[in-house]
Image (tube, rainbow, N blue to C red; front, side, top):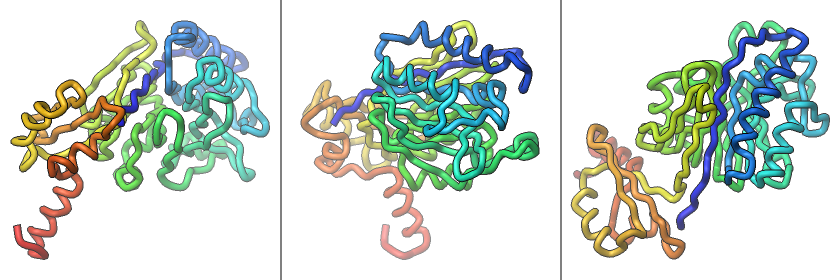
Length: 304
């Protein structure tokens, strides 16, 4: 059934240096400027840039849900006041270690879980940060969400782990943009991709790899309303059925495709049936199943 989520990614641009006495205050002031534009506007999921922890905290200022500090409390306050989920960039203290992390805080202010950056740079390892341990999906009121932080985007191993976990949304908190890697991750993981970045732009990408919202520092907020009830398929064998689906369900269904990829996505806007229900009714084959079947045929394990 239809599940609409209002996503907001907060763009970041600041000249403060890491470790200077007023760095944390500057990043909090910049975040406050952005949230003034967002308070009361109907946000379901907020993503913050890695610059919040990278510039705004030293290792000794690491926080935890049990010992919250300025950043965690700021995120929690926004989550509660706006009844939303926040993916907040933070230096997280846990198990005697400090991680570059995303803390997920729910609409009631409760800690839902965290993602810890897997692929740290040399500059992060030197002051004592610890790498995370693989992909992680958090169940939230805004959907099943996976985290990615900056340098992580370069590693296919992590991306493939997320493909297997089937998140609804990948949230990318980063000091760099990643260019076409963003679209690649969205498509390969069959998920929406929401980026909060520094300097270049902050973008929201759909599961076909298309940018559906973008901002720079002038706009500050990339916003998109997305429907998580989706079914992704190859056009081969499915395309001819689309007119019959539209005749049957009209505005209850939305079908889009990327002709260059040869891949389509179907959304259900109904509260009576899901996109997967409609796919089963019309004998549509999902993209991953189609690709797996093609591999088996090529390996001569079954007949075409």
